[in-house]
Image 1 (cartoon, rainbow, N blue to C red):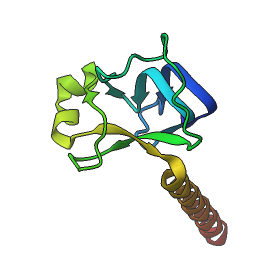
Image 2 (spheres, rainbow, N blue to C red):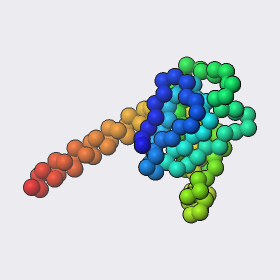
Image 3 (cartoon, rainbow, N blue to C red):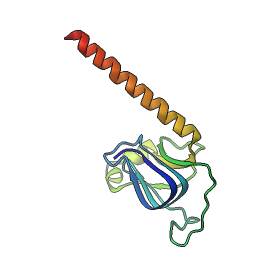
Image 4 (cartoon, rainbow, N blue to C red):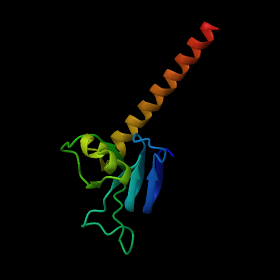
Length: 133
C-alpha cells in the first residue's frame, strides 16, 4: 500500500497508496505504465502516450517519480481523471488533485526527509510516553 520502486522499465498498471495515502510515490527508470493510481487519484493516459504495448524504450537514465500534487500549478505535466469515489464527493475537483511525473532527484530527497521526520516524531512520542509512565 505505500511507495512503488521499479529500477527498470515500469509497464502495465501501477497502484501506490492503495489505502488512500496520497503521499505515496512511484519511482521508475523508464516510466511507461498503462495506468497510474496513487491514493485513489487516477492519471489519464495522455493521447500522445500509448502505454507499454509496442512502446520503444525512452529510458533516460534519470529516475522518474509520479506523485499527487494539490492545485493547478504550472508543474502539472499530465492529465488526471477523478476516481468514481472522488467524482461522487467532488473532492478531487475542489482540491484539484493531479498526478505529475518528474525527475526523481528532488522527490527522493523529500521522501528521505519525510521519513526522518516521521522517525523523529515516533522517537519523541515514545520518549514522552515512557517519561509519563
